[in-house]
Amino acid sequence: MARSKETARAASPSEQRSFRESLFYWTGLLEARYNQSFIEAMRPMAVTVARFRTLVVLNELSDVSVGELARHTSVERSALGRLLEKMESEGLVLRRAKSADRRVLELNIAPRGREQLRIMQPVRRMVRDRAIRGISAGEIARMIALMQRMLLNLDAEVARSVRPPAGGSRQSRARIVTIGRAGGRPKPRPSRRD
Image 1 (tube, rainbow, N blue to C red):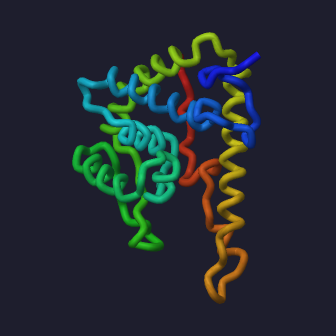
Image 2 (image 1 turned 180 degrees about the vertical axis):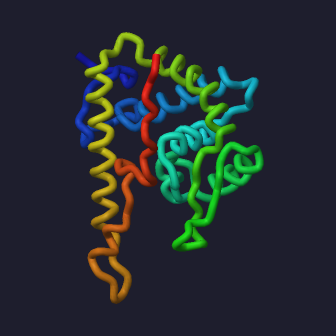
């Protein structure tokens, strides 16, 4: 039986013949559609994905550096710097120089940022719930675990390709922080009193 170009089929990565067979095509498309739906629902507030991700990360972690925040949010560092300046002027985030090294900034969410996040989170959950309709919690957990393994694979490859500076040691390689590891300090979870 002949196959058309349009027929989707499972292929090993080495046999991939079409962009439609690429896992990363589908994850990219899913992420774009998810974000597009969220932005559309939040249109009256002029929310951006970068702004939402920044608030989410800072709500969960404290004393985060700009580099750590860039890794967790997938926002380019220079764009993130401009966003942080704007968010600080709006009273959404707090930036302060780290006491040990005044050149390094520590970032935290401000009370006003937490208020804005409380408005955004139900909308984000609504979009997420629509996307995962009919998918079990176990299936979602497996997808997350597989994506984390892929990130670790990519991070391990980057770590192997990094050469220590002249006179440096292998410990220089250990400075690479992966997306899978949390930077900053986790905030204590408030107890729920119902």
